[in-house]
Length: 145
Image 1 (tube, rainbow, N blue to C red):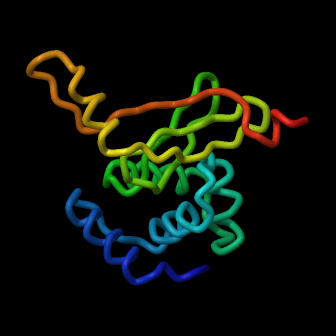
Image 2 (cartoon, rainbow, N blue to C red; image 1 turned 135 degrees about the vertical axis):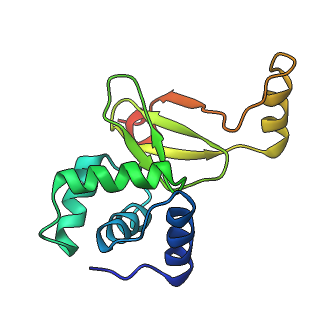
């Protein structure tokens, strides 16, 4: 089992404490798996990766840990039509590009000015905490083939 970097471990502990949860080895391990390879894995992919460092972890435990990480604001769920939920540890405001051919999901950074423009078009009195933008198409690797 890989150790979580001190800064991430502290962030995990603070976020869990804030939501009335407690840090566990399993939660720490699942969080480290999500952070290790930021490729927007599904719960099944996280489970497969988690088992290499913690062979006794169950799929149910992985799902429960992911639910807790999402509830604590440490990880976001990313959903695309008719696809399994994916998980993203990038908490900055950004969009996702989903390649329909390969299934790859890539973060797309959004400039602050664009975020401001998107918020400005909301009806009067509305406020948003998060904007969810998803592009669907083909990545360069799939376009060239």
